[in-house]
Length: 435
Ligand SMILES: *[C@@H]1O[C@H](CO)[C@@H](O)[C@H](O)[C@H]1NC(C)=O
Ligand SMILES: *[C@@H]1O[C@H](CO)[C@@H](O)[C@H](O)[C@H]1NC(C)=O
Image 1 (cartoon, rainbow, N blue to C red):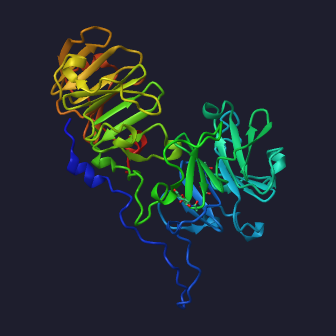
Image 2: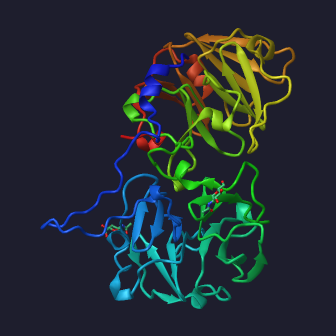
Image 3: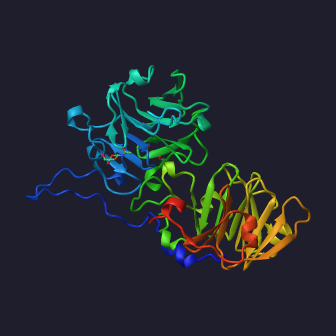
């Protein structure tokens, strides 16, 4: 598959592009009202939380920002009870509940102010709230600095971390027990956010990534300026967060699901994860995940705990761990590794199989990864050519061509197909692109 650099560069608008600064609202008689706060000025946020749809909301005083770009608005426009009746000029802390066993609470947003807690769902205050913090979270102090959810995949049990000064109160949602630790090495977090399985402590206009179990600061040069990563500010780097592709313009280079269930799609210089819509969908440069892949990919497939990335006549094999470590000795030629000449158009492997299917021109080639040396064992003509990418999952095989795809029940039905089925469109629902 060809890297359509012009197309993709046109689509990928770096967030560094200039944008309007916060408007200064003018009253009807030209009386100047208080200007909206501008997060590009370098604010310290009161709280940051995702909502149930995966939008990340930033709070400061009576204002909020809904998402990573856009101007401020009054918080009570989105959360109407955060108004004067409740004397709420700001929130201390907020998080999105992760408690899937408890449908009444799961995905609710909790706000904390002084000694009170407010539970919202679908932007409405739940009945019975506000309550005393102690009623819902016994043992958790008042006047918090910040809070963040920590699901059991990351914290052993579904928990919430409540920060106050250098103390963190870890609340176990099942046992309702609190363990208090002191993390003196971490700055005092005035807001905290779990985003794409990582944990961020915000302090001043900076943020620091940390381990939610030990409090250790992650390697990588923290603190960093939030304006370079979590918002779109003129004069600040965009931190590699790119705008999502428009569905009608999507042209995939590759797509795969790894052994952790993470689904990545690749298009030109960017990649997206499709399994993280709870945190919103985001596009990043491929080099952020795989620094050696500086000119994109032609095909990617997953096998055991490895990701095979193919570009031109080279294959790069990465561990599918968090660091995407390139295996020693790679890249190697596609011919040496797989017994077929590169470049190729697409590749896929079905779950728990050892047979990789390589699509090249109008043919599909089967290669058994258990055999040495590797060689093509079967070769079938396909009812179409110029395919971009292919993915095999529990529901069959999808082969992608421009903004459409074709669905087959299995690799076998694809191999033996003599006519193309009706093309289906790539949509927001199936590929996370913009409609
Ligand atoms: C969410 O709130 C809106 C407006 O208040 C309402 O129309 C919609 O039905 C609500 N959705 C759910 C799932 O409760
Ligand atoms: C932000 O971080 C930089 C270093 O990356 C540091 O020099 C600066 O003092 C920090 N500012 C605040 C307000 O924390």
